[in-house]
Image (tube, rainbow, N blue to C red; front, top):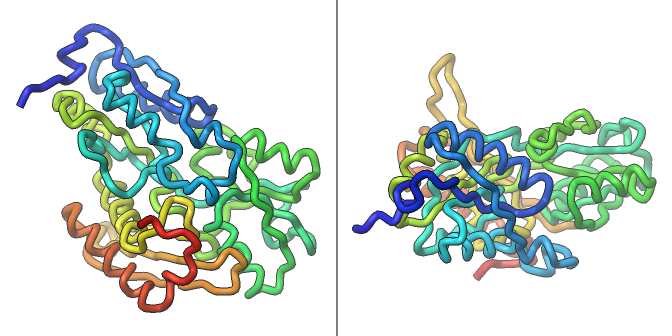
Length: 328
């Protein structure tokens, strides 16, 4: 097979990294660019690409969610306009497109969700009737379910926008709090604004949350091999199990599905993987939450099988009826 790798075809020229234009995307792509420069010895330049998800003003549930932040980047890759791309893994559709390869999944950041609230309040300290902003049906479902079970009075409010916009709703007094991903604030150096880290027992994150995906053309064998040096095998098997659950539920990126796979250690040895999943109605009235534990997967297929097994159990408990959107 012919190797059209940019490591050979454009020897000496900077590698072109495709990224969304947001501050967060640029920050996380900058971190990856530094790491790629270190393993390849090549300069890396950021190429900004505008995606449909960046320009649409509709809520993600309305525009489908699935792939709206990645399609333009993938098209740029396939056209050869960029050499590789960095995505937030939770934004990636579960089906890998022909012609592209997921070359690396680096070590995952903190997968939890966090609260940024007025007056430094934690979730439990929010006053009755508190308005909490989030663009995620998954977060709405779990926050409302937790509030129902603990006698808390909250209102979840759908919002869109970048980190500054969302936190701005709190600073202006329009909202009492917003929920964001811990990883994004960490990559922006803004964890000091967090007022509460939400335990995963309260809110399970989105499948793949906190992880990045580095993608390149399947024909770029040299580049794919170089990028693979950034891959973390533990993160890869964890997110593979989470995304397999999402795919088996036939749910899109904006469906109210949470999942987290974590490694369980017996002393110093890591010997099991626990996968937890949740599906709920956005009002929190109905929730299907289950978990499964198995040996640490040694292959993509093993990790995917764990996700499919949990999905089958959740569907048997009525999970399908709680997802407003099915990605068929």
